[in-house]
Amino acid sequence: MRTTTPEPEALEAGVLKPPNDPAPAPADNERPVGELVHELIEDGKAYARAELGVVKAIASAKLNALKLPAILFGAAFVLVLGAISALAFGVAAGLATLIGPLAGGFVAFLLFAGLAGGLVWFGIKKLQEDL
Image 1 (tube, rainbow, N blue to C red):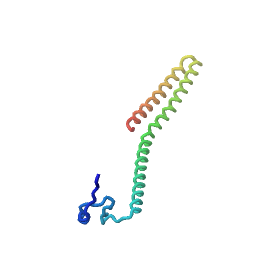
Image 2 (image 1 turned 180 degrees about the horizontal axis):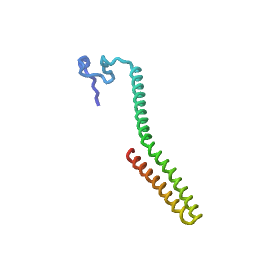
Image 3 (image 1 turned 90 degrees about the vertical axis):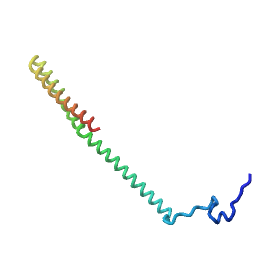
């Protein structure tokens, strides 16, 4: 296989360039490499800070969406404890007299349990809307 070298006239006319001659840099890009690297690092830091801000905003929005349902679930839990206590007291009082206090305890149980069920329903509905 025979390799040919370009003629010197072709090189001078700019028709062919040797492969190891770098292309001349444009005149408007005279900034040093260190400055470009520094700018790239600063841009990367700014991008990372912006992404962190987005993540914080998303987390904050989700936390705010969970506040009210969490409070409602807590209140429902307290009311269920009251309902169970009322039922237990009603059963104890009902066993004492065998008729009246049991009905009163059961009505109190239904009242507290219904209120707790309503709070749970409202909390689930709110949770589904916000998430």
